[in-house]
Length: 108
Image (cartoon, rainbow, N blue to C red; front, side):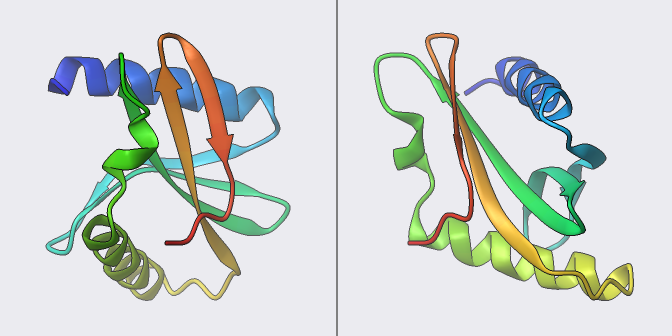
């Protein structure tokens, strides 16, 4: 996915989350371990959200075990750096042909 398409998908995902009562803490958090597309807060739970989009394939398949390991290391770094002791979950927003699928608390 091109960077421009990725940013558009993240913008759509952010709007979707705001409409559902999330507060966006940060977009595109980078560390040496990886990137988190959106970090949001709802009901005192941190949500680390991976955004995937595509056409003619299910974008959830782009979240591999290797990608999940990078996400988890990045979350650990983010929580330590910001001295956060909140519960968290990993979510995914998949945008396929303008349809949005929100998957909460994903695991592999």
